[in-house]
Length: 249
Image (cartoon, rainbow, N blue to C red; front, side, top):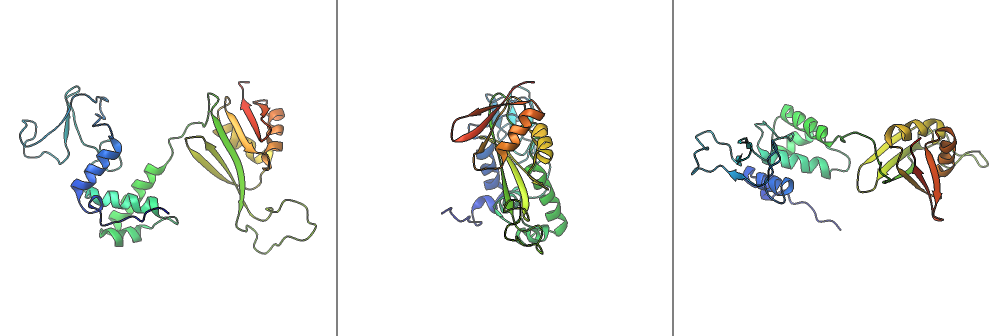
């Protein structure tokens, strides 16, 4: 069983502890300059150095290669924010750990900030959750494709004995593309058929990709249709899974 989070930890209540935590996550092997990428000549600006001055920020570092100053928040959604860093860390943890999501009103109450601040924070954090874009797979990497059925899209309609169609005809159809050791993308689709899924596969997956699905899925017939229609996939089978290796047209 996963350990329960303790929100009394220093990183959720102290800005210096929050900064140390972020540095350990972002720079596990030591500071990296976000301006030039240097890892060799980065030093902390302390009260004993000439660079500090009266206005030096906590956690400020100096890169000896490009002569730029930076902190761990540069290039993140926390950059240039006047909101205490530990509240950002607390808000991010709450949004990541909440299964059903968390509203700005909840953040406002739990963090002790104004509603406007909580709204701003939640939108910034959600923006950071967005994927980087681009196509999945490529270079022979495997991308798993599978469908599932959830809930009841037609609550007034019940399955009649002997009716045609699969058991999920009245449910929400969801198709997910999962790249091994990478990104997952899910789509709520009106039907699991060639006309619906072909544009998704073509738009989201590179041609030189190994598409994989289990043999119990309804997708292998679709892939066979795609082989004929799109002429972009070549079929391979290992006996336990239906595997389709992409080839350049």
